[in-house]
Length: 377
Image (cartoon, rainbow, N blue to C red; front, side):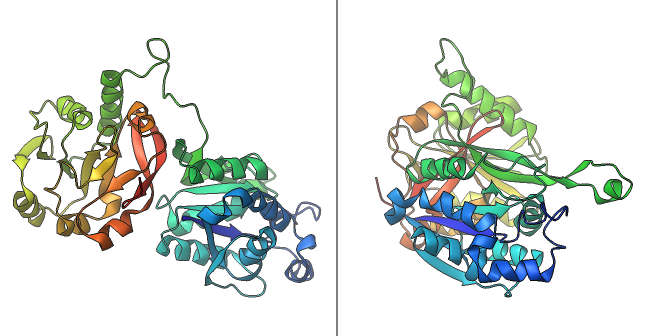
């Protein structure tokens, strides 16, 4: 099942006709009318339009969110399966939005669809940062942020592509809102608050090269450029087997083990061709961040359990899923013909925790979201 988190600001957009700049200062009477009747909301009907477009894949979809107008109401209206993760006060607030986002993060949803404006985007960013992908459905008064689909139908198209297993680009998009200090002085200026991870439908090829086809060697170099741009001297890099990871080692000017794990920190090779015990021992003496670089086996799609058994279930748990970075060309992913990436660590409970969607680095500043399965092919 695709786990969709839903957060609706039921008051988003209502401040426009009132000449207000957001929904936080709406009169209680107007807020109460939304609690009593969906038709009095701008955002709830837009949420229903988006969710109803997902009806053809309803059997593959479960929606999670707060009871009432913050998620349940729109989901029930669209006829989709709903799972409650909490509830807000009768008249929800920005704090309820932040709390809902944190609950959905704990629920490990695949993506959060939020319906609102810039204030809602700010609340979600402050609650979860870049910990999970989000997609905005525009409904607010202020729409300065770059995290929104253009309309409910576009949002549904992106979600449908994810559910169908298509390649969907994902990248950082700005969260912006009116600078309140400048506005108080009569100047309308947006202020940058951060970035959210946002999926977007894009071209299949990252760049046009040699007749429009990906060239594997150039893609490996592009991936290495991306890794080097974000290189952290204090990070322990556990570099897995495969030709895709070799570009990183070559960029560092280090020898590498094509079919093994190399441990790197501060530009130095700490251990070549490391086994599970050696990886564990180096981790014992390391206090900083850890990043594991792995790639998918071409044609099969395994990212764990094939050719990298040095990563035992105990090590994988210790490192944590969020510290793994999957590298693959879009050509390699397209060769899977829509089949998921696979995990087979020999620990069924651990494999189940990896299911869902994961960001795959496919080039320089280029990522896609791709499905991970514990056994489905």
